[in-house]
Image (cartoon, rainbow, N blue to C red; front, side):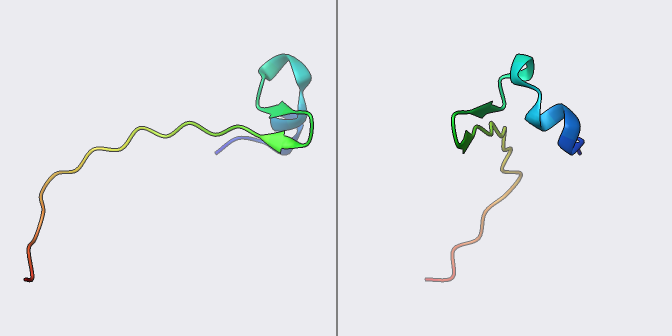
Length: 35
C-alpha cells in the first residue's frame, strides 16, 4: 500500500494534473474454460 502523502507528492509521479497513474503487473497461474 502507498500512503496518501506519498501518492500526492509531485516528485513521485503518481498524480499528474487531476489524474492518478497506476501500473499493475499481473500473473495468471491457471485458467478455466466453462464453455
